[in-house]
Length: 115
Image 1 (cartoon, rainbow, N blue to C red):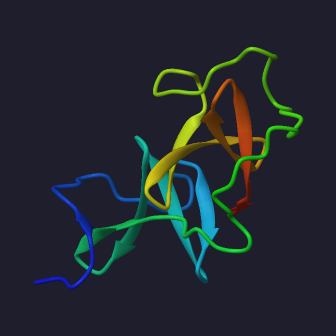
Image 2: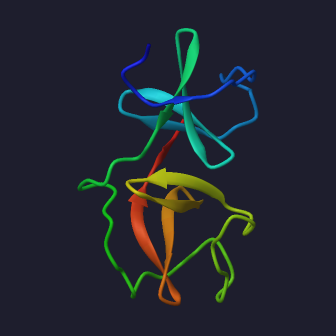
């Protein structure tokens, strides 16, 4: 039994060259995979979430100049950017930082360190 969230049956082995975006997170490497942040841990895969903290805030930033996509682009499951679990919501990875769709603009929820 595990005392942390795990991903159900997961046949794919994450690691260098596996094809998924690698993120440095809490002193280790996690992999973005279908809107999940996976960390291989022994015989199973943990589900991780980017914490809401000083580096990755969860606040409205209406003056954020969204680079990395066209004006009018709307983030969502089929927008072409990878979903990243952040706190209790999903943000989208654009140019190394988290974009969050909000009220007709993108909020900047901080940078991620790509591995």
